[in-house]
Amino acid sequence: MAEKHPEDHVSATHSEHAHMDIGSAAGNAAWDKTIQEAKAANESEHAMTVRQALRSYPWAVMWSIIISMSIIMEGYDTNLIGNFYGYPAFQRQFGRYYSEHHGYQVPQSWQSALGAGSNAGSIIGAFLNGYLIKHFGFRKVFMAGLLSMCAFIFVSFFGKTVGIQVAGQVLCGIPWGMFATIGPAYSSELLPMTLRSYLTAYTNMCFAIGQFISAGVLQSLLNRPDEWSYRIPYAVQWVWPVPLLAIAFFMPESPWWQVRHKRYDEADKTLQRLLAKQYKHTSRQMVAMMIHTDQIESEIEAGTSYWDCFKGSNLRRTEIACVAFAGQVLAGSQFAYSGTYFFEQAGMSPTNAYKLGLGGTAIAFIGTVLSWFLMKGFGRRSMYLTGMGLMAVYLILIGFLTLVKNNNNVVWAQSALCILWLFTFSLTVGPMGWSIAPEVSSTRLRSKTICLARNTYYIAIVVANSIEPYMMNPAAWNWSGKTGFFWFSFAFLTFVWGVFRLTETKGRTFEELDIMFAAGVPTRKFQAYHVDAYAENLNIRDRAVERPADEKV
Image (tube, rainbow, N blue to C red; front, side, top):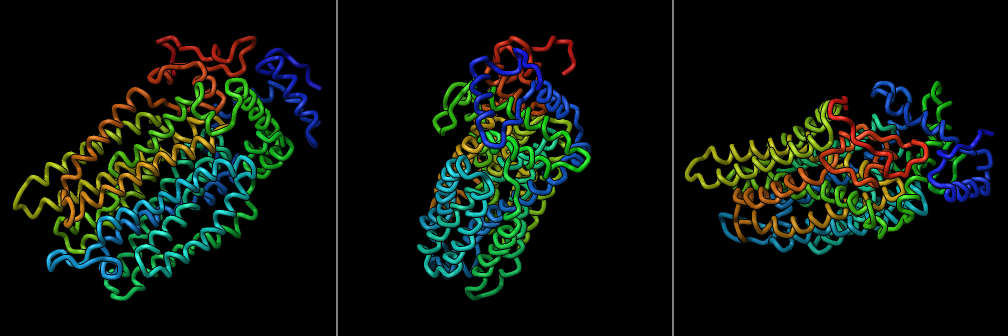
C-alpha cells in the first residue's frame, strides 16, 4: 500500500472521510488513491497531442459522436418550424387569407406559439435532465428520452389544427431539451482535455446537419400541394430515435458520474472500454485524477443541487455558461435562421428563398468544420468575441440596407449578409457556446450548469420567437430588414459583456479550472496564470499564481 503524504488530500478531515467512503463501498476496497497517479494523469493530458488523443481514446470519440447525433433532431425542427411559416401548403392549412398581395399567412400569434412551444418543452426537459442524470446516469435518461421522442412525433404528424401542432411542439421539446444537455455534458466527461472542445463543438455541427436536412426536405416538397408536403418532414424525425435507441443499449456510463457515486471499479472498467488496447493500463491513473478533482470540488463547494450553481465561485461559472449559450440567440439567430421567410417578405420568390436557405445551411455546416482548425490556434474567448463582433456588424448593415429605396439588388445584398452571418456563427459563437458551457462548469455541477445554461438559451429563444414574427410579418409590424437594428443592439451588448466576463478555458484540466475560479483569477488574466493542482501544504486558492510577464504561456 502506498505511503500517504500530506498532499494526498485537500484536508486531513476530508481525507479521512473520503478514505472511509472508499473502504466501505462494495468493490472499492482496492482503491487507495495516490497523489502520484493523479498527477501522472494530469501531466499526460497536458502533454497529449490531438493525434495521440485520437489513438488513445477511439471508443470515447465514437460514443461522443453517436450520442451527440441526437442533437440533429433539434436542429432539424428549429429550421423546420421557422421555415414552415413561408411554406405554401402549411400556410393554406394553418393560416388565414389576408389579401391578394399577402395571400395566406399564419397569424403572428400562432407563429409565436409554434416557435415558443418546442422551447417551452425543452425548458422542462432540461430541468428534468439535471435531476434525472444525478440519480440514474446518462445511459438510462438518454434511452428514456428516445422512447418518449418516438411517441411524441405522432402528435405533430397527425395534428390537423394549429393548436395540436403547438401541443406537439411542446411535447417533442421535452426530449429535445434532454438531448441538448446530455450531448455536451456526456462528451466532455468521456474525452481528454485535448479533444474536449472539438467534440463538444461537434454538437453545433449536428445542429447544422439537422438544419441542412430540413432545408433539403422542405425544398424537395415545396411544390407539393397536399398535406403530405408538411407531414413528410415531420415523419422524417423518426429516422433518428429508432436506431439510436438500439445503439444506446450498449452505451457506456460516464466515468465521472461513476466516480461521483463512489463506483471507482466501475469507472475503471468504463475507461478500459473507452481506451485503445495499448493504453488500457492508464485507466487507474485517470480514475485517480477524477477522484482528486472530485475531492477538490467538494472542499470548495460541497453541494450538488441547482441552488449550489449560484453559490460562491460557481455563480461566476454559471453566469459565463448561461450568457455564452444565450449569446447564440442574442446575436440574432431567430432572424438569420428564419431567412427564407425574410427573403420572401423582402420580395424574393419562394423557390429562390428556399434554395438560398438550403445553401445557407450548407455554408453553416462548412463553418463548423472550419472551426475545428481555428481551435488549435485560437482560444474559446477570442473566437467567441470575434464572431460576436462581426455578426453585430452584419446585422446593422442589413438594417441600413433596408433604408435604400427602389433598388432590386438590396434584397440580394441582405441575403448575402444573412449567409455570411450563418457562416460566422457556425465558425465561432455557435460551436464555442457548446464548448464553453461544459468546460467552465465544475464536474459535480456540470449537468445542472449545462441545464441552466441551455434553459437560459431556451428562455431567450421563447422571447425571440414571440417578437420575431411581429417584426417580420407584413400583417403586423412589418419591419423586414430593419429587424437587423434590433438584434444588433443585443449582439453588441453581448460582445461588451464578453470582453469583461468571458474567461479562456483552453488548455486547462477540470481541476485546474476549479482552482482558478476558487482563487478568483481575473477574466483577462486567465491565460497568464500557472496552476499546480498538486502543490504541497498550500490552500486550494493559493495553487494558482500569475506567471512572470516574460514567461511563455
